[in-house]
Image (cartoon, helix red, strand yellow):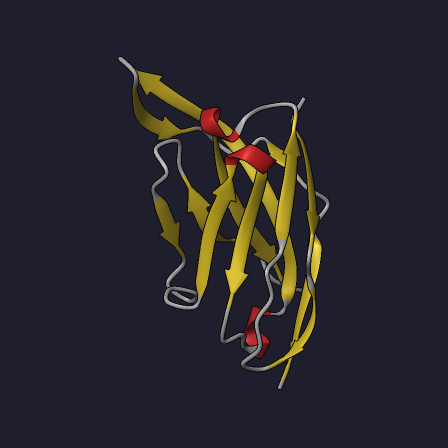
Amino acid sequence: QVHLLESGGGSVQSGGSLRPSCLASGYTHTTRCMGWLRQAPGKAREGVAAIDGDGGTSYADSVKGRFTISQDNAKNTLYLQMNSLKPEDTAMYYCAAAEAYYSGGYFVTCGRYNSWGQGTQVTVSS
């Protein structure tokens, strides 16, 4: 069973920065796809950033150039560096994990997210 624990959220003013982290246990990052998703009150949950089984990264258009996803395999920790924060970034941020599928030793694709953290709140004031 994968266990994910987020921390590092908080309240900042517009233009500020935060760096939430997600400590993972029960598996290794080298065999999993990881991602950050967020949900604002009254809105659907949306993907923010993801890192796949080959280390490739992807971002929602709304955060490109401002957010950076990274992982430290030695610490089993996933990070989300958030710069130039805007009030519309206010949400509960969740860490999630999925299976990474390989063929012939090469990464093929990620499965659906099947493990979730409890979330960390990010609030950006104008």
